Image (tube, rainbow, N blue to C red; front, top):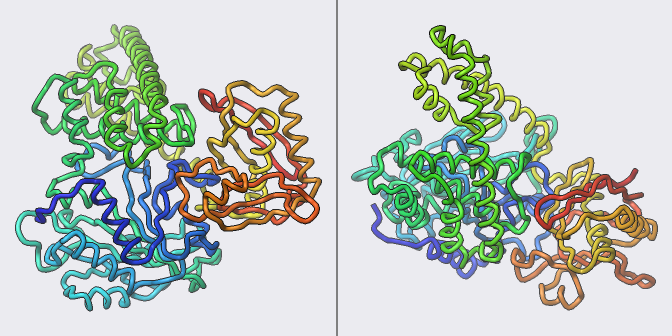
Length: 613
């Protein structure tokens, strides 16, 4: 095992410096966790997600070679968190080629970083490549680059699409083979031959080669612009570099887990308690970053807010399992803010919101749990005289409804039933668990079907309707500042092909007169047929021109500034830093109508609107 130790900040710096200073990449700032103008996913799930328009061919203001650190949330495996490896929030180190270098140079840079910069021994590394199928050939090109770097055939595995292929994100679009890098984490020397099914080989990096476009007919055509998209998980590499068995044994979680044990008044943890510690620390770290994001998501019963609520409440339940009853979420969130704020400055800027929302959600959930216990006890009392008949006297979906309505996990339900004498043996436990699992699976299937329908469009829909609605957000933003005041700033945007949703900071409900005035201003600019154009310039130049740049921390040295209304005869109506997409003239929108104005969260209002009606 490699003995070199790195801190998280050391690793971030080494990665960025390697690609930026040594290999000509421009560093860009990571994007928000809440995808901007993209209804296809709830959270930013990978470093490539915010770059989709540029991977599709749009020119990036910083050029064709980019690198960054991107914070990500993945929710597919929330129920798996608690083991040694699954994480909800993670940091992705990435470098991209937008039609510049391709397989050979990408692989050589990856190899150089692993073996020279990090000092990992080739003896502990292995690699996988695409095995080929009827859609695309075997990726011997990548394998040959690895061979030329000194990798033996025993350490190169050719795997099918499910292992070594990325995309498309939706039904159609860019996709291609990838090559993955693995590090041996087992005891002693790594085996001579690489077995990808051996869990002791841990994937630490992935180079995706976007060389095909999947058509609506299902065929794979060569892309005109071939891209490289890479991703290295910071937590996994930090684990490897520290010789740890899991990310939870690194600096990222060490202080929080010590605090959990202090609050729970214990010093040693068995396997079950360790699982709860991991769930608490993972979920509250993810919750801290979601609450600290500049787009101001707070706990709710829909979309991102529902995921956030689920994370916090699951952490609270496991807090009770390790002996922590109340008021701990805010304290643990404070440790994460302290340890991450030097790099993620938004956490410090938004710490009051993080702390207050954590505390309020913990208080709300405490009341919900108490209500749930009362309902469960009432139901048990109701059937007390029928206890001898067994657990089937309860309504068939009762145990799941306790979870769905009151947040009661199955283990808490079983515990209460045991304490009241309803569960007498393992057979009774199995009955409750099987009953719960049946309805939980039905619930999951319905949720997935809904999500598939909601997010069927794939990443970054740039259809004509979405382009019009995106353009309308600029007009709306300016109109709101005109009517309500210069304090108005965008706090989020979500666009589907049917409508736009625009969140902005404002402390009061808009009056009908204000809504009408905003509508009139936007429609006036549509009627004026303003030309829409853009220039690339530095952030300072954009400021000098009066451009709105509300999220400047995410920009590189150069930005795109979109202007609406500037030609020989007109003055500027709106000038804003943005990545697109936009129409060429405001007249293409035809008309603008506000459907609803409502509260989104504390101090944040939300408008839903349509165009072309």
